[in-house]
Image 1 (cartoon, rainbow, N blue to C red):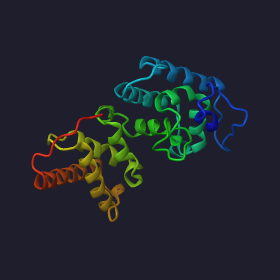
Image 2 (cartoon, rainbow, N blue to C red):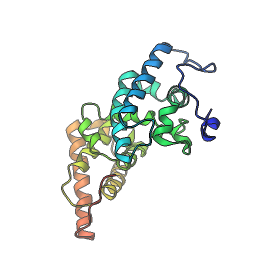
Image 3 (tube, rainbow, N blue to C red):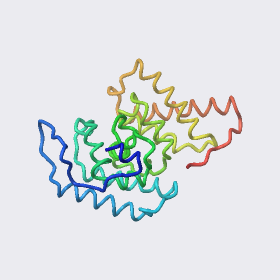
Length: 234
């Protein structure tokens, strides 16, 4: 099916596919539920300009709202959410029109779920899970920020680490490049994770650790390059 997408002929949205398969355990979703998801996402996309081309700000705003819709419509366990076929079904069968509008056809990872941190819909589901109850933190992050946090598996697989690192970085008042700060903080955190089991830490201890590492980064930047210019969010 992706061959059709790459050739500029994305299929129309469908609530089922003749070659779809089912997991050996668990229930089966009814086509009606798939259609409800198609309608909800299509309606949301139209609020941000679909089917016309949308600017960067509109696409990011769509992602933030779509994350809540995807999470609300798909009541999945983490194990179920790791099923790559499920996400490929969404992008290629249920939501090809919106997937095309959001990312175009050139990036195969946005369509076929080889990397769930980059797939159009899988990444939004996980963002909604990680930042549940803390949506203001998610709203303060750019796509680049999220990539830095979620694509590093040792960090991105732990909601507390992602959330508290993001909180620490977004609360910074120092005039430093957000991208550079996150890159340095995540490198420091990964070194800690080599000998620290964060599951043994309380929520407050995780928060304190992430703030401490962020402050270490800012201190180093200020020492190495005083007056480091800030970076605008895109």
